[in-house]
Each structure stands twice: as C-alpha cells, then as structure tokens.
Length: 450
Image (cartoon, rainbow, N blue to C red; front, side, top):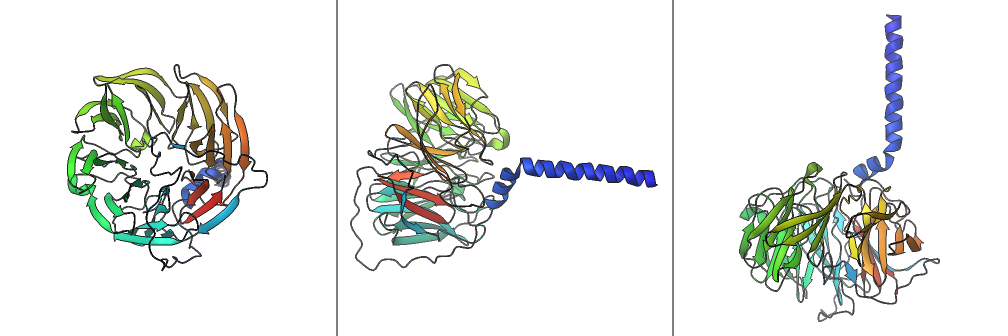
C-alpha cells in the first residue's frame, strides 16, 4: 500500500508540474480567453446629449466610413502624419461607457465622416449605437434596440458600421441589420436576418456590411448564407447559398467586367453576382471551427484568402467560370487580421489572435515565397496610410512600419498605450483626418497624429 501511495504521489506531482509548465507556456492565451469574455465596470456615465442645435453633416478630407474604408483597400487618405513618436502622442479625449455589463464586450471599430463618429456598444439586453463629435467625444445622439444573442466573447457588435452619405448601417451579432439617419439618429428601418433564414454562428454574426449604390449586403448563414437588402427600404432583394456564415466582411470586385461580391463563408469562398445574387462558383476552404474571418484581398483578377488555426493561405486567379489555385501554403495563416497587397508583395500578421507572439510577414505575391518574417510587432491589426502600415498588437502597443520587400523596417513604436489590459485589444486602429481612434471594449480614445 505504501509503495502504491508513493507511486500515486509521484504521478500527482508530475501532473502538477505539467499543469504549471503548460499554464506558463500558454499564460497569454489563457489571459486573453478569460479577459475577453467579460467587461470590467466602467468609471464614466454616458454623457448628456449636447443641447446646442444639431449641426449639419460635413465631410472631411480623409474620412473612414467602413471596415476597409471608401475604396475597400484598408487605406487612409491622410498625409503628413507624425512619424516621430519618441515623446508619445497627444491624447485629445477619452470615453469609457460604450459597454455596460460584464457580458457586453463589443469589438466593432468606429467610423467617421466629417463631424460624425459612429461607434457601437451594448447595454444589458440592448444593442446600442452612439454618434459622437470626433473632435471632442461629445455625444450627438444615442439609439438602441432589444437584441437577443449568445455571449461568446461578449454580446456586443462584431461588425463595423458603414456610413453612406446621410445614413449609417449597423449589423449586430444577433442578426439585426439597421439603417439610421446620420443627422439625428432616427431609425429608418431594421431587419433581422433570421427572418430570411439566417443563423448566428458560434461567435456571432460578424460580417461588416457592404453598401453599394442600391444594396446593403451581409453574411447571414443558414438558408440565407449571403443576403442583399434594398438599402433605402430594407426589402430583401436576393439571398444566395446555404450553410454556416463566415466572420469576414463581404468584398466586391469586378470579374470579366461584371460586379461580383465575394462571400468568405464558414466552409469556403463564393462568388456571387451583385445585381441578382447568382452564385458563379463556390470553392471549399475548410478551417477548424469553421472560422473564416479574414477579409479576402483583391488585386485585378487575383484573390488572396487566409485563415488561422494553422490553416494557411491561398492565392486564386478568378473568372466567372471558377477559381484557379495559383499557389497554396501554410506559412501564412492569419486568424482575423486583414493582410495587404502592396506592389507585388503581401504583407500582414500570421498567427492566431489568442496570443501576442505571432509573426508579421512579407510574401512574394506571384509565388507565395516568404521574403522575411519578424516577431517584433507581436500579433495584431493594421491599416495603411501614406507609405506606412500603422499596426496595433493585442496588448495595445502601436507600431509604424514601412513595407519593404527586402527587410522589416520599423519607423516608430509606442508601447502599451492602454496600460495593462485584461484580454486582447482586437479592434483595429482607425486614422481619420489627422486623428487616431483606438477602441477596447467599452473604451474609446482619440489621439493627435498629424
């Protein structure tokens, strides 16, 4: 018996050591998994709406109106940004009330047109839409609606709104697509994709809407995998495909002179004619947990797709009749960080978002050959501005780098702008009219960067 007890104690000791070692190895991942599920109590109450008359809507020189901005290339039109960060960046304003309740985590990015900033949040059982003055953070209007949804990594929005002239479109994780008057917040129409056969996937409906001349299009899943609504009335125009929704935004391109939308759904990539919803082709791209969350990147007739969980990436040459694989590899696997095609090269983060130890890589577009790789910027998200990529890792550190196919060129760095964070700052930075906007759960900060 004593011998048996000694053996059991040794086994228990080895198990304990193994648990400690694994916990140390995956400390960041565990911290992000736990920290991103809950929202800490906020310290600031929602500000009163300004009593001064509502100002007419304006436009800025370099607005950011949607997930990948006006031209769909994830690029800001500003010039003359500050590249010397040795003395930091000047904070203009900060708010801390966008999410209220421990299950209210929201990852949607803000959008800005002129004197209107729209950002989404969550309040108990409601989806909330805020419109702020981008200059000082003052509240212009606030609207909400009851929304039932699951709570994996928060019940709040994943999708980023789209400003279309005097309207703004929002898409909640539970499937509520709404159109608002940008001037005063009046709700123009609201639909839920479930009414058309849509189904919420595990981590919520996340497809940032695509707005065209006449339509607003989202990934919806179920028997209505992709849906197009009339953007003025909310009437459904077409739906296409069946199966699980993807988490990526809808992308538009021209194929043989015809406008086509790309739906990166749970099982693959589909090309759908914009005007009538005809599925031209649908190729398989299988990932763990059906997570296709990185927006496809287009150059001419080439489409680059990538997914995490070590799935890898693929370059396709597309036509109306199908998609030919140019190359495929596992060297570049982006969980949900959109890459860039700049010149004849691909730049972007590779790795999963549950840690800050990914790689930033440069690949040759034509062959997929890796030109270089660095771990100097953790894992995060980027936007393009001038000749730079402005990046933020999941711990809130900012980086400015210059895309160069021969070597990694870091221009500036500002560590942990949020201080110590619980979880990961997944929401990408937004640069608009000389201002930098950073969002993490219930908080939004504005910095001068010009």
